[in-house]
Image (cartoon, rainbow, N blue to C red; front, side, top):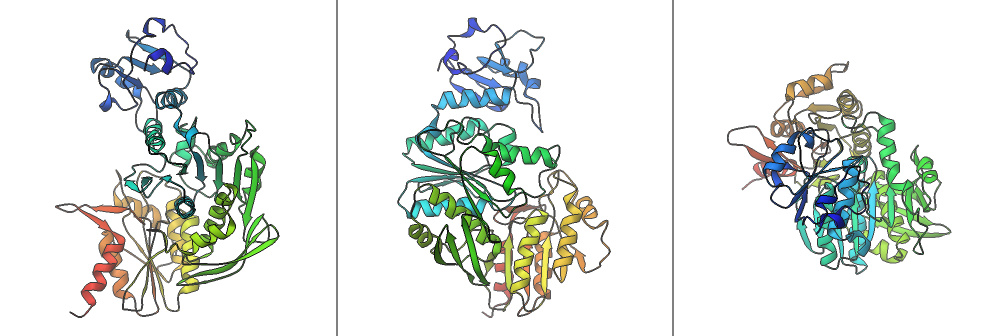
Length: 489
């Protein structure tokens, strides 16, 4: 594609006319991917500043370079005010605005994004649509699954993925939309049809300047939704029970469907009865009531179901079809996932990695436990430090015994992370075991029939155990292996 066409929607602040007829064969923000014919976009993010690699990009054959400050060296530069925005503009142009060819669902919030997108995806599939999914568990195009490095892929990768979906004649795409993706303009140019807000609690303060900055990123998905007032109305599905729910309602020009479990909302759940095997409740849609039985456990999953129901209903799928799909779903990997065993112990693996998320799953686990509740939890490295003591306090306040262990330490020492978690604790009902596998096995060795083991933080993810040689550690697999060793041959 010619550079003149590629940057036609950008506000360029320097004279680039001499480069207008250059042919661009690829786009990238990563210096490792720059080759002859590339357009290199200099992004300044948390980890690096692309402007530091300008000379290297020139040496590797970049045809043009988008910058937000002109270097002192001579080169084929395109000067813009915001390189993140420019990258979204050129990526959309390069791949032909693929989101316009399908119905787009975006789900944002602190907790519940993965389960809600999974549910919407399953409902769409049950209703006969050829759909795709972009999120934490995997990326999916029709029936093909691909690994995912980020909840919301970076801009160029995201547009390429959407283009592949369009080529595969995908009719609907369901996306987890992270606050990182919103603040860094990764989803700029995507024409969302339905946006879902799950909840808002503390997270990602290692990335966002404040809770206000985090909140503003979340609301931006809704302020942009439906501004064009097109013939096909947009819809916002909003948790009205959340303390910020009304703010999201007020922020959007789109049609709003509210949901909740506290007697408010266009879509409500009443008479909720949850057991270790599932949940029953009545779903109220305006003036109609529908009985619903699901394999998913806990009130937090009721909220996820209401969110998915609202998104699907707004897209025109009938309530009966939606409920039929939901009742056939057995669970979501790493989300309050029960690990079967013959010892009478309820072993649960969950992705809970925020204070609110951990509190939610512990609240449900307590209701289902007749004996003792053990909680194995850690905190990730190079992430929000302020939530570490909160996570530890919640664990020992809402479980009979906590075991603090390594999560994903990244570039921090696990010992330092645990020290942050335990520094202000006054209770002593916890152990520290840095080896995650041994921590899980320690809890299992303490448990008897009627007890519950909650392993939180990693969920579907695997942890690379720092031994020689390194091995991938899967929480579910550790539990299964432990019980297999106990079973008689």
